[in-house]
Amino acid sequence: MYFNKINSIYNFNDNAIRNTPIFTDNNNELLDIADDQFDLDVARKIINKHRKSHFDTIAYHAVDYVFNQQGCFQSRFSDGSYPVWYGSLDQETTFYETIFHWHRTIIEAMHYDDDTPIVTNRSLFSVGCNAMLIDLRKSIDEIPELTDKNLKSYKTTQTLGKEIYKQNQSGIYTYSARKNKGENIAIFNRKALSNVEHLKNIEYKYDFKKSKVFVVDKSSKKLILEI
Image (cartoon, rainbow, N blue to C red):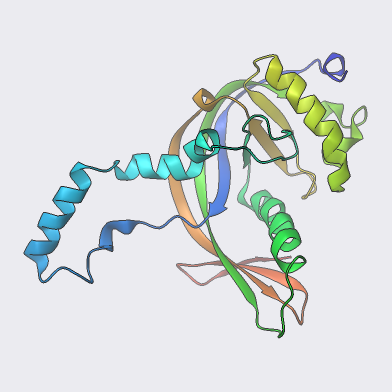
């Protein structure tokens, strides 16, 4: 239906930014129960022997979780019958993408009795992608639903995504529907992703009085963005 409108392939070899619920390093999980440093070191050795490495844990949180879920969620390019991993080419685009859904599913959907700010903690990762991707950036005029902000447009993009998925393509390179000139990749094949690095933890704080979301670096406490 839509596949015949696509005539561009892009050799993507770059890093993308993944924005997820917060990732925490559990190296200090035993501090409350260890009597001294010796006990702490012994306990850590035992636990580390039987669990995944720190890097494997990061990779699972940022990438593998998406492909290992028991059930998939519907999204812009998936009807829920297969997993899709999403990343952006810059961190600001990830803010616009994730804040839209956070505001829609939490702020708008729930009833709050006071004006206390609502806070959520998230993490940013850099993930390498090396794959031939279907480039939809030049198809916006023919398929305007690609950047339509209305969730009803997902019916079209899910149909398109499924056609591309059935063609065993690695993924899609497209513009963001939430940030002007932002760019996203949607990946169907786990093998296209590698070299995961945890960049930073951030905080979203929704201020009811100002009707704005403030994005703050959790380490430096520096304001990054307000939307």
